[in-house]
Image 1 (cartoon, rainbow, N blue to C red):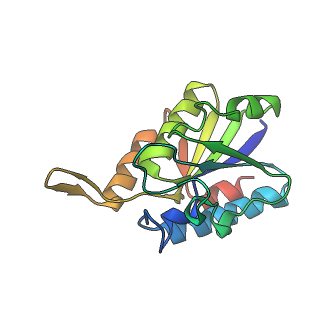
Image 2: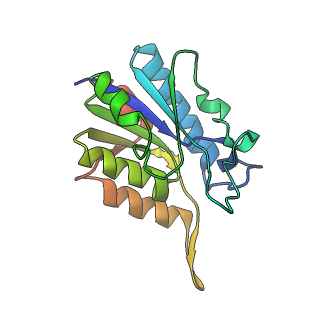
Length: 182
């Protein structure tokens, strides 16, 4: 089964000093970077997805800012595909599906940020489109979420979303486990 690594929104704004720092972004980015190295070493397909926010009032991933750039831990090499998106679903109004189908990709190994938003949305969409998905859970990061006076910690958000995706939508594993299986 032909596979590709899909790296979603691993961008400067999610790292320390960025406009929307996530819990564990440095560690998750490093694990995504190691997974990327294995894909490159095995000459497997890699797709970088970069979010550029065009939403009125957006505070991060703004066009032509350093924060919107793909983080150095997973910086694309010449010849690697970079797809820009404007919505949480990496397939929405992008050439991603056409690119993957054109390359004969059937399985996606997914890593990136934010787990509760673009990772969740894209993984579910990919499964609905017929892709077999594996998710490197420790190569993903998220943040605390609040509703009224109630806060759910990033660790709780991460655990809940990975548990929800595991099974029907994806096989959730560590980046190391996924790399070892290549």
